[in-house]
Image 1 (spheres, helix red, strand yellow):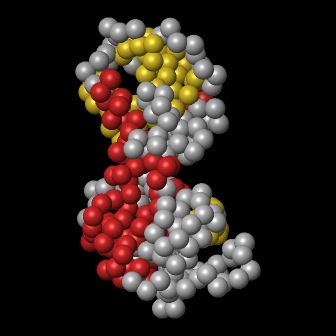
Image 2 (cartoon, helix red, strand yellow; image 1 turned 90 degrees about the horizontal axis):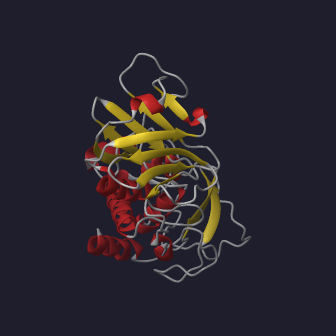
Image 3 (cartoon, helix red, strand yellow; image 1 turned 90 degrees about the vertical axis):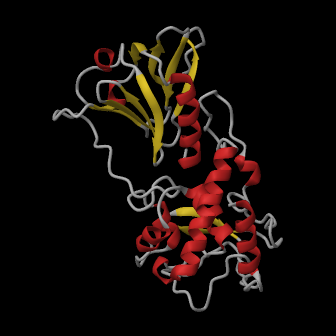
Length: 310
């Protein structure tokens, strides 16, 4: 599922291709993916100029003149690409928007249809699903506001994945950020304290910025707006690396269930502290807890790494 780095990559690429351009003819293959203003996109969009393309949470937003906002939610398999109008139309391409003055068009594909398009005009009339509110942006939130957001009796992994609290994080970047911060994923959020909360925010920002530089992670479906795979998956330190050696301490990466998702962590770099309350017992595939031990100096090592790369 595309997360913040993937959506940011697509938004930046689309901004370079679309900003200042005028939209042309619209081809909509499925009306059930469109929400918001009930008027047809084929009436609303042509001759509208694209002012900018930006991102909010995991969403890509086209701001058009006339007060129109076209919001794309990528869901699990959504893709947005700019290509020639002569290119073969891939299966599950639901929306095509021509770009005037060029031979190109913007295409939105989504074979599992968990995503969608919201056309927001300020009209009181609305059809389809509401877009939903999202929380603070991890790349912009202040440390003080972030610490307040963590004062909840929930697992830290579940809290970070809650889009109404912190916007844009998903399974991949939660696991990677928690490892960088040296925090066990089942730790209760309200027990972190200021020092570890600040370290976690630095780790989240470091991880997201680095993932953006590498155009996101491609594990299955994700492609950027030019149709290319991301490459940050080659640098994952824990995600989907069960039983492989930790890149920091060489201990085997473990997999557990947290927030209803497969969760990957290093038991040495992210120890379950005796002073940290958790909401459930860790269940792993291994019957032995022998590899779970506090790594002496792990905070010092990880903090140093954060300082060099943030």
